[in-house]
Length: 161
Image (cartoon, rainbow, N blue to C red; front, side, top):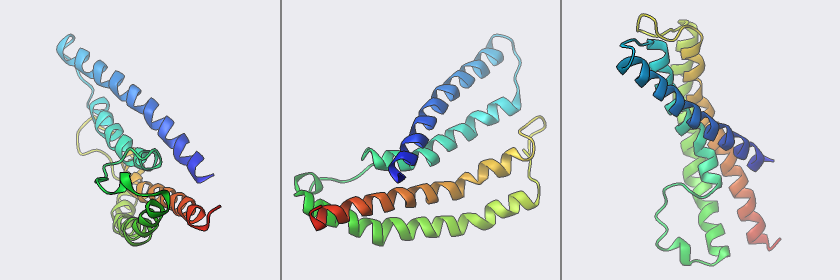
């Protein structure tokens, strides 16, 4: 179930990446061909880029495509890999996710409280900025969720199931 959520988010992120490329193309054509621009459209590319990285992180972890020094890991038996994953999730990933969510909470809450909008004239209006900043809480939650899925898989391997 947790893996399905990560897969769904990963697919949505892939489509968002394509959409981001198209919007970037539109921004470039508007600027250099028509000598015009829309600030909110330019800002949306920046936010889509952030969204792709933060929401796509759990999917990347699920697919084992994240950056990892696997000089030793790749030669380990499945049981030893399960131990490494279990320890990594319990002592590194989950505490980091808790810290990130905790630190981001006030930042996001203030944005909602202030009804924050873009600083730029013609930029993204309220509630888009607080909504987008809320991704700072979504990312550690989805990573933790994927960490729990990895933890469950590791436990199954260690139990011989």
